[in-house]
Length: 126
Image 1 (cartoon, one colour):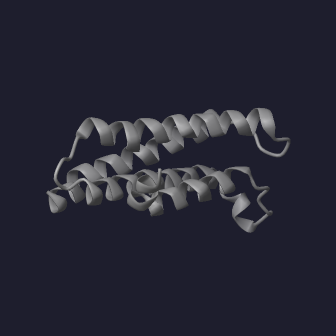
Image 2: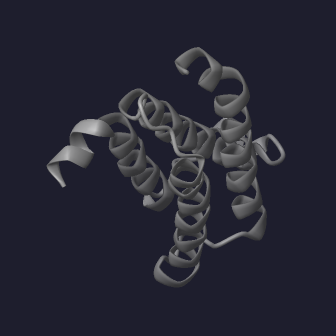
Image 3: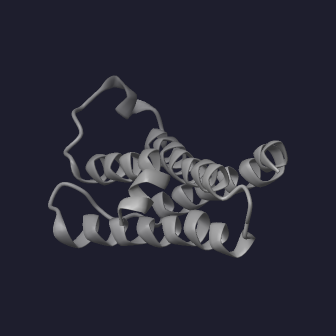
């Protein structure tokens, strides 16, 4: 467990931040008037989460990059995590609701991070 914390400290911090941001009651701001601004926020949060997982995996596995491992850890798991958060928001809070479009925005963020990492950042590592 300690070795995972040492290999993925920023990813763990981002996961904790995403959990916090997903369950706190946001204040009202003028940005609330911008149509679908929350979808952009979702996309950015999950782009950052998945992107950091990719970066920390590549940094700590330079000698043995396994696409299956990183695909599961930085693509599949964040999407499942996102779906679980949406369900928890729907059924465990009175001030948040689960939304299929939020899950879609999260998945787009994860996908964009994967494409960016694999095609643009991975060649610099290996």
